Image (tube, rainbow, N blue to C red):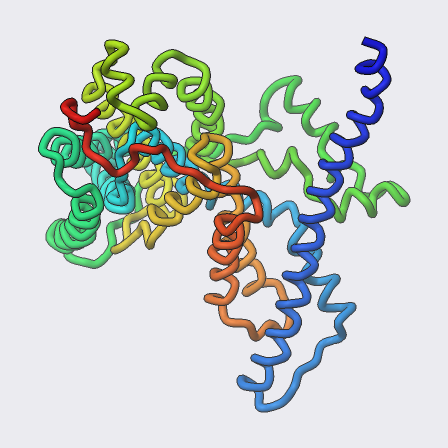
Length: 399
């Protein structure tokens, strides 16, 4: 016991050391990003202006770091990452039972279309949200019937769902509204924490922006993100998504139902031997993923844009799959991967608007999260191992 007690300070130092290393590593990669942007900016300034527009590197650093740490950047990150996060969490469920569904891209698209159509026809945005989830469940059910019951190739089925979604939503939009986009519809209202009696005053007191005029301390608070303002004044659906995160984590990793999902994905024959109805649980997991992807799609349309446009999902279903793999098939890991994508999408917008003499094309900024994912999957955050039985139809006769 004395040896263990004597080693506690050393153990604490090791743990703190790991946290410090992670923090320093994040800062290092962000500085590499800034330097890379500076070099790219010089190169593109030559091609665009036929002359080198070499901005002072110190000024460039200050401007970029201000945007990197700006509260508005993180506020936009939360909005942009939520549709991806919901779909990625759903993908964790269907892949944990061994079912691959790359049709989540198409389900998001159907969710975005259904949310607008039913919000438009009923005049109620919440009816649109409910319809988006129902459409998500319906399309996921089709995928489940084809891949689980009839044992069709899962990748091919997912591709078919995506192609049909892209084509049919475009056709329906043109037929119903006679344009390539829908009219503006009612959206779910935003929620301001500061309007809550008593609690709003407490949150206002805790907000960093309250102390921006203080000597020394105000400068520090102005240069770091304000957590209260990051979380405040969002569409209510964003808060629903945040509340779903711990609930889905508990369901998948802390309950008997979640344990059965995970056992089925690793060895369905073992699960069947233990008396688990493999088919039933596979259907349940796929339908959960469909509902979440449909909900994510509804945020894309009536949560962010207030209307449906053709190809509204724009690859975000595939990005969600990448975020799930980044997060190693876990709920919080998938959310982290989604937040990284959302952060760089936010940067892409803010660089284009706020950074002076910025010549780097937007696609170069949009490439960053994909590069981060590739680095992560090649071992920078450890090996990402999928469930052993993923992509294989369940056959009771197999050993």
